[in-house]
Image 1 (cartoon, one colour):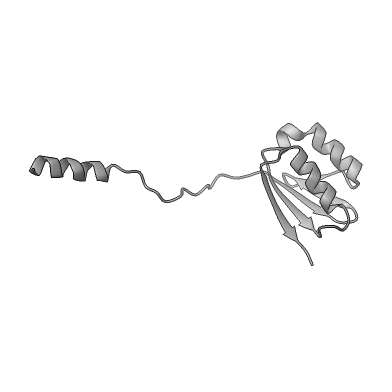
Image 2 (cartoon, one colour; image 1 turned 45 degrees about the vertical axis):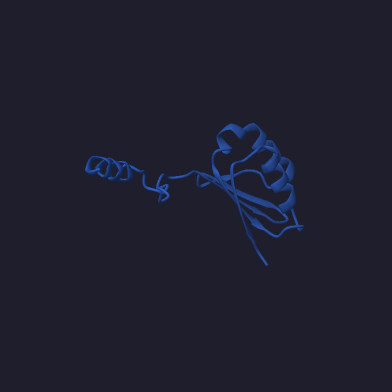
Length: 103
């Protein structure tokens, strides 16, 4: 009986920690301000795409490097180019998209 209790205690002690591990690795950000014009920055460098057509061309030509970046889109929905930018990002299957909706 003592051996079985010792085995049970040993097996419970071997369980993995259930707390979520923090991700402390640096990320590459793709920051987009979608208003009447598009202001975008990728990896702290400005993107030369101020119109929707220029932005779509930029995303399509650089989609492999952009797809794994963390995307932040600021602007107002249903005004300016916000909705079209979101459609472009979702169409190209970006993984990490967060929005910052302004009043």
